[in-house]
Image 1: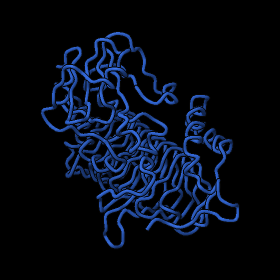
Image 2: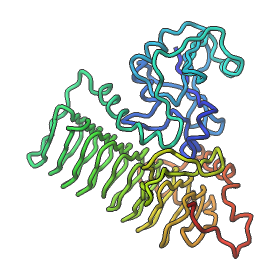
Image 3: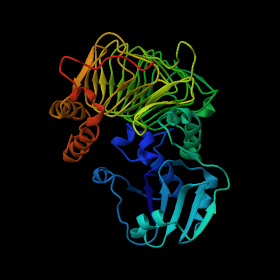
Image 4: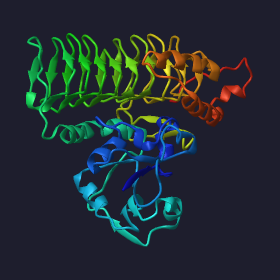
Length: 412
């Protein structure tokens, strides 16, 4: 049976800027993406995505003929929920209050009509589900999802040995090492949560790691790094300095000293040396961040909230990000001082003001960066970026302003 993960229209806008460039289910929380969680638990080789049309070339729906399980892509599964989803009969849907969780369709080609018109047979979930419904939910739930994914991926398997006499280990039973991992003179403390080291990843000399931690395939924790817990370093990424309760979705680098806390960094991002993020206001008040869906700053209700940075964005050395800063897609930030707390997609500048980072220039950088990973900035990627560029034009308010009036300032 086909498994199709859909973008809930009531949720997707609240996960921008990350869902500008991916379906909701392609977000990473824990070790795995939400799609990979369902794929593993349902035992299917692949899943399809029901998402925005401009994303379908990269994230296809696949075969939508015949019966299918249609599942809300924002939901993190557990054993009980998977059992309920698998027990659905054709024409039956599963709800958590007003939120559609999953449905068993006899004909997946009618999914749009059924979601709009409703289902004749419905069930309620036995327990409230875990749903990623706001950007800060990603880091808030990361530690718990690392634990869930760790149990899922390591059950019945044997870890590779540490293989380094100079590495200090606490609670080795909570550490799992995939083939190809290299560790040198590090401290691994898994007393407070599991540590998962993905295939061909590396932990360099003097790194201090506290669990929960997920170091995904091909990633590096650089020499002397301090990983404080609840961290995910997505595939083919590098981290250094001090990192706490943060996620790098993949192919991104924070290679040097500086603090990253309670933050989510998209793919193909780079944080310059000594970049620092504030995750706590001086007055300890709840953090407000920019909401693309509301078009204003909204209260997260969280005392700790750092940086939300969309795909293909970069910042120069010594960049200082204020508490609760949101950076869109394809931005380039540099210069002294604190830049504003909402930096629109395709911005070029910093605290002194911004201009538009034109799409051809963005493409030049993306081509160089992706080539380093032997990947192409192909027509599919270009099409996605073109769409996001056009979709976010209203956010770049300086394009409508006089050239002598650059946008500056911060949200208080």
